[in-house]
Length: 391
View 1 (cartoon, rainbow, N blue to C red):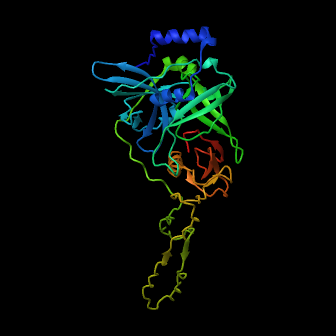
View 2 (spheres, rainbow, N blue to C red):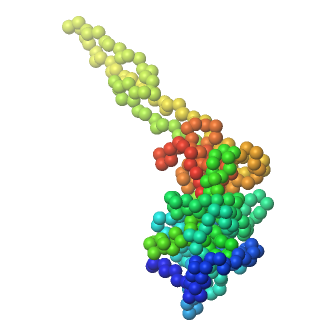
């Protein structure tokens, strides 16, 4: 089913007035923007992960008994085939009943049904964003050491750039802290209107920080929205698979059976050469020649090749890190990494962690940490970036 987004006449009129006469728009206070953001920002959780991302309620369709709500988020937040739930501002949990992917951008539409009433966001005009302009973004980051659950965050930022060529739709650049778990959250202008979807950050390398946060302009969403395609929705939770470890038990090769007259690797022959009996003279009594016993062949397996043990995925303990995780900034606090999220990433990508001092290796550069793993056929050695929702 194609998703059609319609604004009320009141909203269309208000947007037209701002477009024609922007000089009359008066910014509201950051506290007022936060009140708007808190009412429309939702938390998104997957059935096999402790944290996924965030989203924003953009539409409400009222029926006879229930109300269908539409939420906008990033595609990379819900791309795994599992069950997803939404936590709304009243701390209620709702199962996602429909997912649609927006082609050409890292965006997705989610829907859920309830008898409760929630506010919807007011659409802004992302074409009016310019460098130096103040914006706000909100979401539910992954918990850190001092928190036991994902809690709402509201962050003030400034537009630092506009991109003419955007990958996956990311064309708005702004500053501010980048926290995993806020992917898919809304970006507001100074009047509390939705102007972008937050979703990506770029690391500059070890000790160099980030190039900034990236958002997808809301105008991009409405331009691509008619092409939305349905994605299969899982209605039952997907159990978490165990995390693979690097340490392996070597399996000895099968025992080989030697064939007489052939030389085989790994097989030793211990039999003596056959005895040759002399021929008896004619006329003398002869006895049957003795039977020559077949050679005795003793086989033994090749000695097993013992692979040196690799670092295993371990549980984080204060002030220590596994050998396969190193800070991008050696001076930063070591209590921030989300070990379950990193392990989930390694499992999802079928990667085996190795010590960061070993080569060849692949380096997954995150916001605060670099994760090292052994290359495989699908992921050769090299350096890779991860989005904000990674770890």
